Length: 283
Image 1: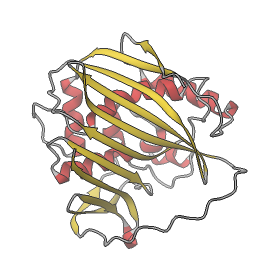
Image 2: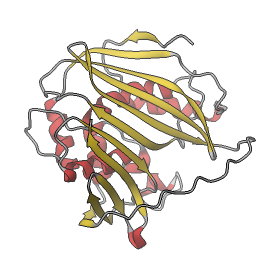
Image 3: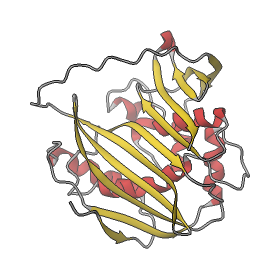
Image 4: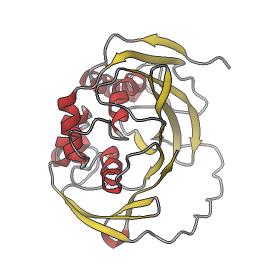
């Protein structure tokens, strides 16, 4: 199968109209792992980081401010508008409304100076069946000086009825949970602050009233904020590989426990409910 064809962009798209377009088109989507999906790769050359937005992101996520290198999760923020342009389009078969970010893997191959110039690209790698519907795999790459310096793969789940026979549940790996390191009390405005810094103003994160429209009792934290907050506490600075899974939403305001040991981390809630689990190790 031929690889994706490149489409160059002059600037990063605005998220608000993409969210609106995706919401309007969602009722007409027919999700299936066998559906066709966009074969284009959106490319944004000559990207430079807005230092004011970066500082706001660092503050809300707990990263040190004023460092001369991007936090390990920040390139996801830079690539998210391109991913949204793909996922909100007519050719993307999964409805944007209700789409759930279920996991992400990140590899940072090299240090990324804040003042550098980068080429950013995003494409849909494929669709895969899931016991609850269909998942899309979205690949983001950042190049500096012609070399890939950062890359990620995110999975997004569209829940729907499936006629495929249910696979036998995989036996969970028995691992001793990492010990608690800190308890964090999360304010009700975390979603609004992260949304302002990242541009992701999904209504489920902003206010209890808008969150209730989508079945949540209160606003929920962005999944990528929870991962970034854990990695900031972990102190990731070198080239690394990160894997994280989003298990359950974090309600705002609320209290969570950050646990970590030997490269593993978890974010746990009441009664040890796991919200996020992941690993980080040298690349």
